[in-house]
Image 1 (cartoon, rainbow, N blue to C red):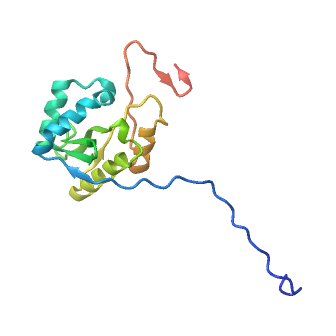
Image 2 (image 1 turned 30 degrees about the vertical axis):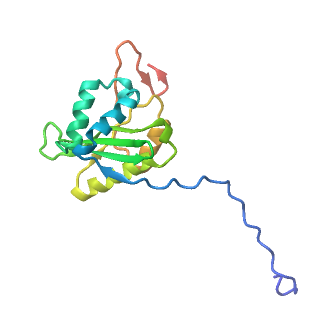
Image 3 (image 1 turned 90 degrees about the horizontal axis):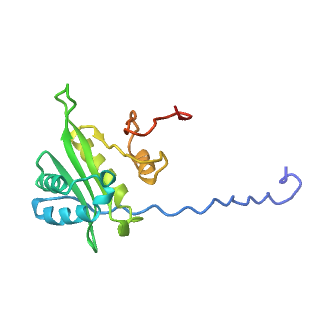
Length: 182
């Protein structure tokens, strides 16, 4: 209509979107080898309070790290940085009790506190997914968090399909129903 009246066309002002932080770059993820075992054990000991809620026992963690670095029954993914190993994911090959088909199960996925906000956690998940795709097996990652909106749970929800739920009972604590304590 403005053309018929000889008026210039209306100027569209682009809508301002809220500033979003740029995506974090992908980190260089490597599969650990036997030569990485000592560094991996040192790293896991330094972040042991973040593995299984601090319940990881040193002798079992050391044995598992050595086993996975040697690729015996699984593997360990690592991200090295200026401080040495800054992030790692341990993956074991498991099978359901009544099936011969195995799947990949994460034992730990941890990033050093000083290396957070780097993209390491996302890179570990993406690399594990690529590996699972390559061998055609399901990847299972269980996150235990106090809140469903914890950062680690949100990260996993963005990169992995939610399938089912894990329910647990802690002796001495009342179970929470959908609307609070039952």
